[in-house]
Amino acid sequence: MKEATDDSTPTNRAPQAVINVAGVPLQEAGSCLIEEPSDPCAIVIIGACGDLTRRKIILALFRLFKSGGLPDPFLVVGTDLNEITTGEYREFIKESIEVMSGESPDADAWDSFVTRLHYLSIDPEDDSPYSSLADVLKQQLRAFRIPANRLFYLAVPPSQYVNVVRNLGKAGLAAESEDWSGWARIVIEKPFGRDLKSAQDLDTHIHQYFREHQIYRIDHYLAKETVQNILMFRFANAIFEPIWNRRYINHVQITAAETLGVEHRAVYYEQAGVLRDMFQNHMLQLLAMTAMEPPSVFEADRVRDERVKVFRSLRPFAVDQIHDHLVLGQYVAGEIGGQTVPGYREEPGVNPHSMVPTFAMAKVYIDNWRWQGVPFYLRSGKRMARKLTEIAIQFKRVPYLMFRNVLSERIHPNLLVLRIQPDERITLTFQTKFPGAKVCLQPVTMDFHYSTVQQGALLDAYETVILDCLLGDHMLFVRQDGVEQCWAFLSPILDACETCADREQSLHFYEAGTWGPRGADDLMQQGGCAWRLS
Image (cartoon, one colour):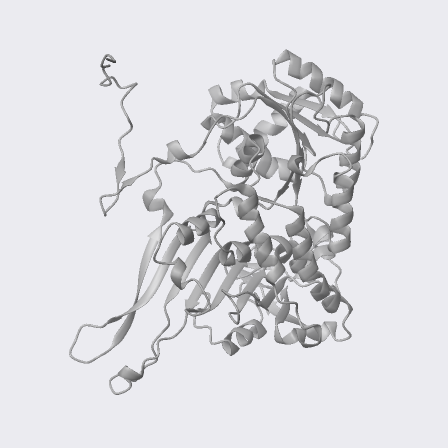
């Protein structure tokens, strides 16, 4: 018989459960942050002095380190054009963390973290120094007693992807072989090409050296907690999925609005515009998460299979009637937060006669059994009234003949809003009777904020994707067939917009600090949309 043990000491005591208003225990956030430790490895940032590294990557790594999310041991090697020493690079990283977090890093954590940081000056497009990178990596891995596991993060412009991948491959750094006995993974930021052909060409080049299981194509929107929660909300609650279809839903609005202009990205944005920058990736991924069928099991490839099925079911645009389904806009000077801001054509680096759209609303349809005939309105723009990303599901109006003799007003439809940022929440609006002898209806809203059950720090999107890369989990990453399906849907729209004879007349101007051009509101009113941004 097994001897009883004393579990009364603090080290053995189970954590206190947090109880919500229904008396159901809520999980401690800290226990859900990290599933399992990842393998010891080297993280190589190519483009280590660039804006993406400074604003996102290095802060995410430091926060992961503090929360125990990085393996032990680990190593960070930065490479870039800058001719600086490792000591100077460490100071650069410390200053970046201070600027982006708004505070100095914790001294003890920083002293431990900084010893893992190393720097090597390399031109990302010059192949000769990559053999030096391989030598430095081998030396450092031996010094830290780390297996030959390597994560390469491409924090460089998309135009450099092909050369960087080729140089890594030529130096043998992509190999998972006897020389490099550990795993090798590569992280690629969007955009994945600028059209279907360039996306396919990029994939061909990458696959010369890396196999599909080694490739992690990041769309950081998929890593946001509330985006992931769409699947849980739908498939872990029996009350919503039965009505998540054409019989009950009138339409869906998906919005990603920014108050920022093009900032430092004018050169890129002049080549991309809002459709390439937001729709090919973020907007269509949010659409897929909202509309996908339940996978047979919650595994990466099964979930990605269902997202790709949505892309395959998108109804092709009728190019000869494109203005009935698409509104494009460009911001002019206006006011945001009490500050006057310039129009897009006045931004530094922008062509003063630019026809590049900074706003788009598209009405799209999914031709499958669940969604046939239900319009999805996808809207994204810069310099809008406020920063906002949300999914609004408007249900069909009730057949209210029974109220015809007692109600004079129109009954508002039920509305479910999934707010992704900035204040993560879920709201459900429905009708109740206003107190009194007269029959009057009033809409009321049930409002759930994620912050009300938050018991500690959550991982942000970049922390989540880096952690998943280290764990080898592809769930939140985009597969190549999904990339190609999105481009196949969007490319005819881009061709029609960029080559049409009335391109200037098709671009609607809107004042910065508003919700976009009036034509977008007109498009939604035609579909009976009751939900308005405010």
